[in-house]
Length: 631
Image (tube, rainbow, N blue to C red; front, side, top):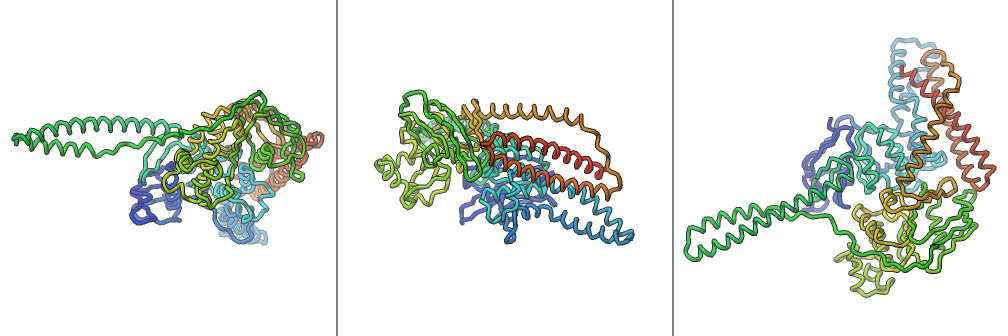
């Protein structure tokens, strides 16, 4: 079955400039499709046309009847004062309506209403409510919120007070809970940390609907999509594989087109040489050759219809300047601690870093990664401990949010004033970073986040440094710009310390990982894939113990009574699960606050272990009751 059909779609925002120019494709039910193309090629516009937010000029766009479409980048407006919990509950509006009617019917039956129509309506509505997951809404909501790290505290906050990233996460949770048939994901991982991104990938792996994803996250594209549609000059090209397949196949097609073009050009040159000779013979009186010359010129025109294929953009030709490093020790961390109020980010941490090491500092949002970088750079003071640098260390830093002191200056003047270089040198360096023509006279304040990062990198690469510190270096950049940075980092031989959620970047460069979680830093020597394997082995060991424990549990007594009794027990179990999850979240917060108190932490860990056992039993009881109701 076809879910989406786009036929000869034309869309323009300026007269004579078609953003989408005859775009044609179709997506089958259950497909996982990646939408690629340069920034500004019309990817997001296409999504807004599919959802009905934008109209189009020509062509046809059809979504299969009855299919619900959800767009992740689109954050709806909610009534004033709506909490996050209220927003999440909007996913269950149809079930809430059924709940109210069921309650009304139950009230009428309890007063003695035994009318056949009332009983039939109650049985029918109960069955449809069960089939739609009405008895599992709280459990579903808990699982999705846990996966996307929407805490109990955050669920009570007003939605309007959340950051853009938090609103995106809540909106994603709402769409998942709505059981949307077609998910349109526009940069879904931009505001998610590693754990939430991995959870989303696992969810999409089990999602039965259709997925279209715009993303610059190559790791995400490799894991999620099975087909690529690339939009170029308003039209579509198709690749039957994930991102890695697309890269190889696109290069193969380019080389094939280039060979065909060169072959045709060689034939054109041969025909033109022959035609020129015939013209000379005709000029000397051989009139019969005119007809052959005319025929040959027509043939040349037919061969010259193909333009030279455009290849991949050239990689950066510039690299980081490097300062010679003398000695083995780059810097040492001694008994470092930092807290905000009662919350400990990390405590009593020590480490040694040698010259040339490449370290990825990872962890969930808000765990203190950027705070540690600020301490390292001297912009933040630790509560206890010190960081000591070697005598020849010179640091270069690319922050997550780039700002310039004089945003009114244009790009050339910024480099002249801040880097003390000539106008020509400034233009040459800007050109290497794809700031060309009139772009170099733009005020810095008019640049996008990605352009600001590029400009800052342009400055960093001219400095002689031997410790490069990057905070989310690829966050605002498209794939081509990410590859430029990676080429530059590849050529850089100094030490590297970076924070990133880009797993492709992490896996390519990290030889050591500092994982910041639960108020402590785990030091792991290896790349991201090895770290993932280590975590998978630990999870296997934990899961191997659970079946043995569950076998020893006494068999639970089956609930007695009819459907109504089972429904009551199911609702009571859901309330118990919600209460246990709230207690678990509260214990986690308490453990973070007491991260430096070993005895207290041990006591809290034991309490949480007992609570998780009780929670597992509650989930098992809920599943058993659900199955019996369903049977």
